[in-house]
Image (cartoon, rainbow, N blue to C red; front, side, top):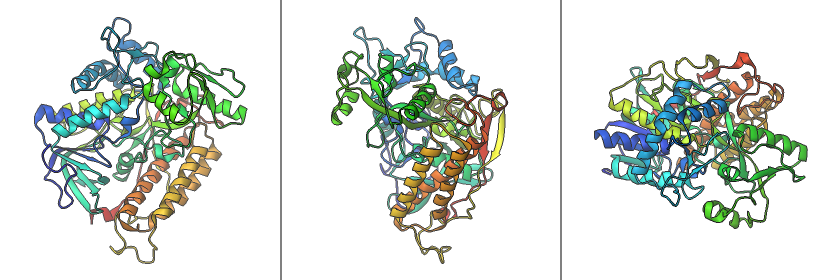
Length: 559
């Protein structure tokens, strides 16, 4: 890699061909692919190290039909459409399942090592919602860590500049297109990074919830920036809760992989009885667990993994995690409960990852490609990042500059209903300006402890009111908590670290407002969205909700 490994702290680098924001599977694969094929100048900007992202926490694996002898891409397509509960874009799903095997092969060529049988064939697992064993994995349940390792090494060998420890603040718009981003450097200074193309691959927003499998940096930064730029988000009400997060105080919550249930593990209530088909799609299992928790008056159910043979050999990383908390899967039933895991929606894109704004692209969990619909099929997320990250790189290489009416962005799939984002009563806030920069007269600076307390309260409110089961009254209560958190955004932050944390809170508030807007309007239960007051699907709501601004800007960021 040329240039600085941390990126400059003075003036930004010269204009790059592609700036990738986020270093998860989608962004990393796009960056490596474009740099390798074209010699284009590619930069990656990420909150932590290149290897740090939500990707590294992924356990189950990558769903792909690597052999047509016992499986088919048509079967994978049908399973994905079924999990999506009527809201997938079929053309996007077809792209996913047909191009996926080749992308997995390319990942292996980059150095990713997956589990194999004694005969050298890729080992494949069965997970919930899949009709065939088609999930490839690494070290049993450490697939994300292996993917992050391989792509991190490839990134360091290929990208021109890596801005590690930087936080993106807002998009730069010039003459009707995206021309780069404004970002916060590790030393607290604010810079503009110019780019011919920008790819938002910023991941999800599990940090909206008190109990999540996502790392602390998953604060919906890309989606919030898109809303501030006037773009629309879709399907954000469909938050997938992983059914079997280990019920321990640690955050992010350790996952007990879906593959365990594919190997024979069963779920039991307080009375020891099974209460659900464990291989149903995740939203079905999470709903059943929520009902069982209410019936038991408990905060967890039990995963009986004693039928899984050779647990420590098959799932070594899980065995170590359980040993650390004093649990033996060969003897103990394991306490589990749903945890916020994945947002099925995001910034609307066409089949190449192009957004409605020329020069701006999105891929992975930050995007709404049309693949996931109302609920993501297990182990399709890493595959989506590979497939649509590569399509962004190929489209940029081919000279594409704007969207076409394909996929979720104007395709022939589900109709779209447009909704204005829930108003928060905010004027322009000086989030990116330090105290004394002007515009903050009469407003006391907000400290980090105050911001953290507001974030914890916001998370508690979303878990209680917008979690696995929702209602009109619970969503309204969450909205009031959202407005209290938004009140802090009028005030300037104390110091560079406080600035970063306040911007993250602002992004959670912004995306939370979009989520509540769509969840309140969706008066039905569909996929991962469950309403106790509207328990059935409604044919009239078989549509995609697009939520758009205006929302408050961060004017001080450009100063």
